[in-house]
Image 1 (spheres, rainbow, N blue to C red):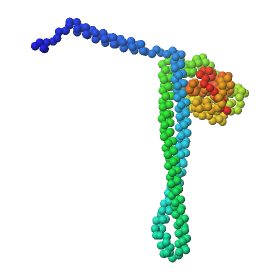
Image 2: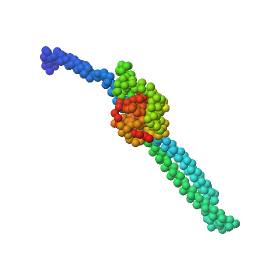
Image 3: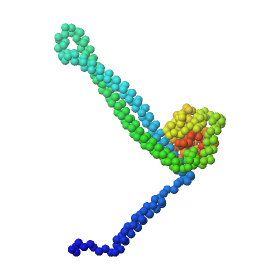
Image 4: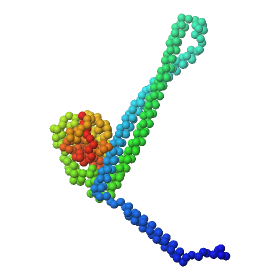
Length: 358
């Protein structure tokens, strides 16, 4: 039947459609190849890698200082919590003692019965003795009231301390959550730096690790030699230039030369930047806060042209790095992972300010 006849096709329709489809697929494949080729990131130059690694280290150090601040608050909160727990234990003991005393009064009243005082006086064979006992009972009743009052007071104290302790515990949990977040940030930045270094030739990667501040391999080598060559001679020069606590802080900083950088560390085996300055001034008898952004407010502000050995020098707009000035435009600082405590020029990073702790 006509209704079942196959419709006519143009003689070129099938081949044209197949050709068009083939060209479309080929074009898509070509576009894909070209797109992948066009977006392939070129390998960074040594200068670019050096700058990027320095940024990662600087960002990691900023997160480290945030971590240090949160950890300091968390440790302080834990210390307060321990004190509250001890106080709660002592108050609970007093509450139990007050309850026991109240229980003794209740037991004595039960044994004494509930007969009216006038009837017991009439039935007593010795009214004088009874009156004496009644006076004692009245005083006992006053004692019972006092015991009840003590129980209420001790109970209120225990509840107050426990409520405060629960609030402090909640604070600790929030701080620990923040600590974990900062730790993840630090490790992510350091992982990116390591990944970038792993893609470079070994010699270039080593040069960048020792000099991530962007000051050049030659300067890094000179700095390393200067750090090794310091010690008693450099300390002696500083001692002649400055005395007292500042000299002791500088001497400590020199004694730490060559020790590894470790974020969150305050010595004696390793340091981060603010951990080193805190430990140096602690050796001089001065207690500094834990972080760069609090250390900058822990002394008298000093302009750059009035720096003296022992002053703290800070870098970057976020106050994320600190070193201990030792004179002649140099400082001792803990630079970053992979670079030990060393002597370095203060102009190798963006200067942000300086303070004199004592």
